[in-house]
Figure 1: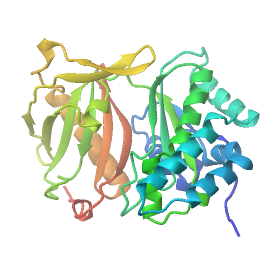
Figure 2 (figure 1 turned 90 degrees about the horizontal axis):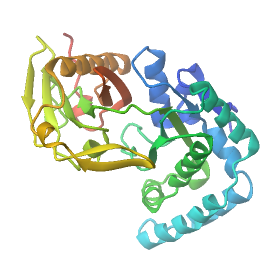
Figure 3 (figure 1 turned 120 degrees about the horizontal axis):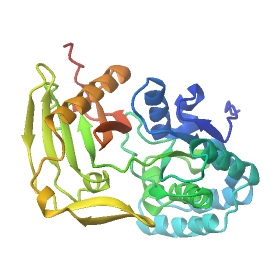
Figure 4 (figure 1 turned 180 degrees about the vertical axis):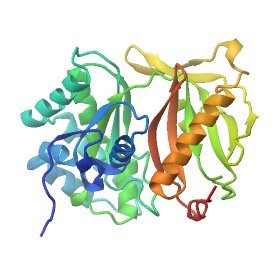
Amino acid sequence: MSTHVAQPFVLELADPAATDLATTGGKGSSLARLAAAGLPVPGGFHVTTDAYRAAVRGAPQHVIVEAAGLVDPGRPETYEAAAARIAQVFAELEIPGAVADAVRAGHSRLHPAGTGALAVRSSATAEDLPGMSFAGQQDSYLNIRGEEALLRAVRDCWSSLWTARAIGYRARHGIPADGVALAVVVQDLVDADAAGVLFTVDPMTGSRDSVLINAAWGLGAAVVSGQVTPDTFLVARLGGAVGTTISTKDVRTVRSEDGTRNEPVPAELRELPSLTDAQAADLAALGTRIEELYEVAVDVEWAVRDGRSFVLQARAVTGAAGRQPVPEV
């Protein structure tokens, strides 16, 4: 018998109920925890897994489970066939009125004037779990503006739960299709001057002597996707000395009228460090605060705008490096 307790379709970002993985997924539950702890997380709200369940209840869910049930983990072509069938389900899906109204209300609370650029990110219930590297399997949408565009982005996030890649991943790991659900995190988009990732442990060596920061100009997509070689900053835990390796940064991701785009970095910025030493030290301090909160090594996606640092996401470091003890300093 299911023990699932129904949740509202929308929860505020720091709502205590939002720290539940089954309600808001890996990304959402982590952000709820960070926001509740007072860390500098962009404002926003969660569209819960119950909103997804309400949207696919009945015929859509039957078609999804039936299509996923025909997948053979050893035959990638079956992932593609299932994904194509399920994509059609979401292309025709009408979001239930109660769900759409809850999302609109969340948007109105965040932006009473109806304006403001949003980041709309998928948050799966099977991602960011110990021993699994599921993050990144679903889609995110940046620079979303207005209620109707937001609703489309939410639906597109739901659909991305069923890409061929995600279907194949779950099939190979024995995750049953009928129990899968997706939450969505809606936040203010930080129009970053610089962005990237940081690690409170060296992911290659397991060393905890320094916080490792990768940074580049613009939004973080170019760093996360490997389209640019980032600058590297090593901030020592003891003493705070900053060591830098500056790369030539040719490309940056920026906002565009209909989302984001890559553009060449202005020549005068390509060889300049994307962070000051003070900004790197501030980010390292945020990383260690999050590590203390999680009681495990973390990797953190971050952005800097007008000198202010923002935490966009944090997760435990998986693998041997993440199992090293947290140092007492």
